[in-house]
Every structure is written in C-alpha cells, then in structure tokens.
Length: 463
Image (cartoon, rainbow, N blue to C red; front, side, top):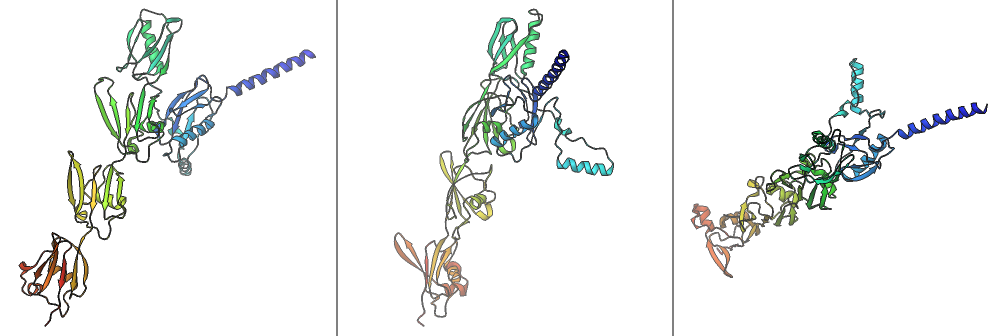
C-alpha cells in the first residue's frame, strides 16, 4: 500500500514539475530573437536578440529586462520608451511577434468594417494582421571602426581583438585580410570559418562579439551634444533623440551631416537634410558628424507692430511673410513703398529698396538681413484751406497737390500767394507758388515739388 501511495505521489510530483517547467519556459528567454514594429514609423522597426542576462537594448535608448515577459507586456514597455523619447510621434502603435507564442492579432476598425462588408456580400474574408509580415531592416551589420573580439573554439592562440578598417577589412592570423563590412556577426563568423577550412582546420568554430561600435557625433543646437555608438541602422531622428532633442532655436529644416568617405579618407561630403520630411529615412554612417545649426536671424526694425530680432522659420521666407507673421504687420504710418533691406555681401553692406505690394511676395530674405521700414514723411498745410493740418508725404507731391489734400481754398484765400516754407541748413526759406494761376492756366512749370517736412501756407486775401 505504501508503495502504491509513493508511486502515485511520484507521478503527481513529476506532473507538477512538468507543469512548472512548461510555465517557466513560457515568455521571452535569453537567446531568443524577435521583431519589433512601430506602425507607420518603419525606421523604428528592428530585430533584437535577448542577451544572456535576459535584456534587450532598444535603439540605444534604454536596456530593458524582458525575460519571462509575453509580447503584450513588452509592447507596453516599448510603447513607453517611444512615448518618452520620440515625443513627436502621435499615438504610436507597437507590435511584437514572438515565434511560438499564440497571439490573437489586434483587428483595426478598418479591418472589422471590411469583414462586415465582405461577409454581407458573400466575399472571401481578408486575414487580419496579414500586413504585419513586411520585411524589416536586417540585424546589425558590421561597419568600419567596429572593434571585434574573435575566437576559435579550442585555439586560444587565435584569439584576437581587431578594429575594422576604413575599407571594411581586418587582418586575421593564417588567412590575412578579410572583408567584413556590411556582414552580420553570423555571416562574418561563417566567412572566417570557411577561410580557415581551406588548408588549416577541419571544422573550426568561430565566435565573434562586438566589443566597441563605430561612432558618430551630434553637435550644435541640441540639449545633449556628444559622441554616440552607431549600434545598428540609426536614422537622423534617432541621432537627435540620443542627443536629448533639439533646442528651441534649432534649424530643423537644414541639418548638416558631414561624412567622410570610407573608401577615400580625404573625401568629405556634406548633406543638408530636412528633419521633418527626411529625418526618418536618412541613415547615419560611421564617423558622421551631425551639426544642428541655429535658425537664421533677421532683424525687422522701424514702423512695425513688434520690431526686433527673429529666426527664419522656413527654408525660404519672403519679405511680406516676415513682416506679417513675425513682426505683426506694418504700422499705419509705415511707408510700404520703400522698405530697405540691408544685406552683407562680400563684407560690404548692400541696400535693396522694395515696394512691399509689388515685390513683397517674391523678395527672398537671407540670414542677417536688416529690414528697415520707415514711416511716411509729412507735410503741413495751414491758412485759408478747408482742412488745414498734417498730411502724409509721398515722393512727387507738389504744392498744388497739397492744397487739394487740404480740401481746396476757402473763399478768402489769396490763391496766387501760396508759400512753401522749407528748412535748409537750419534756416527757413520761403518759395512763392501761384497756385491759382497754375490751376487756371494749366501751366505746371511754376508748381513746386515738395520735400518731407515742408509747410504750405495759404494767406488770406485783403481784397
């Protein structure tokens, strides 16, 4: 009887141990590889391998302990990282497919709607989630300046730490120069194994680990400039995230990438990239220098609502947009017909005079431009006119025009004794203008073209 009890107890214990081991085996395990995808953000898609300590390193941001997690829990974890670092992505959606895990794919509202339509029409149903199996970016591929630890099992004298050259090669004992640029670690190990088999070993087992990754730098208007490891296929967006994001005055329309050719060390190329439209598709190379410059400055001075210094916010900004959107528009007294733009050219100031209405939408601004908007000048009309007072001055205005602006003569005006009082060299000069005669005869040769600040005086007639 005791033997039977012991046997039953042993069987139960064995079943429990199997159950516990099965539960332990569930979830993510060290050595496991899987794909992480972010909907509508393909540059964030990546393939990761769980390290021996049960962690993964997602896009150089943070190391995440994933051992024992299921895909749903890990999706929430990765979603949190994206929301923390990629703040400009609206409503990110993460999906993770782990081999062997039973997971019901989420069905979007669009797919549900398609199901209903097709079901009602008697058509074949589309399999939800079929679009999720798109090809991802490959796992990390070796680059110049990566430092590798290479060993051959049982052959300690072949252990080497090597750096991949600019040309993408290493020198290894017995086989000499080996090209590794662009290969995965597994492909590199296979290549060295096949070369060692040619006359040296029967079945060599090569192991490669990346000791140090190639680097790139981010400089300029970012919150955390510095040098970073190029672990995998990183985009310009990734680079700015690693550098703690751009500053408020960063010119994201024209980010400069300075790249040294891996084939010709003396060849340097510069790329200008628009962060918003190209940042997620521009991939970095080893030794790239990402330079985030400040937005171009312009100065808007004079008769505007808010004069001051402003940053050019677009690739191309025209004069009218700068005045309207940056400086708040013109004042009532502003002379829009003769706006001055002072520009430095070849270390000299060059002045452009622009009519805002005619050229404002076509005149492109440059960095450091000084835009000067002057107020209209004024003239004064006093004496025997219907509406004496000050009036805006415009080029070409005459004494006859001034009388007309002031509503014309009164009944007692001395029309042929109109005087223009002009300040010259600190003294007043009086110029007599027979306005009545000019109006009657049409002889404009005796009219006087006014200057800014002139005063027109119409005396009273004594007869």
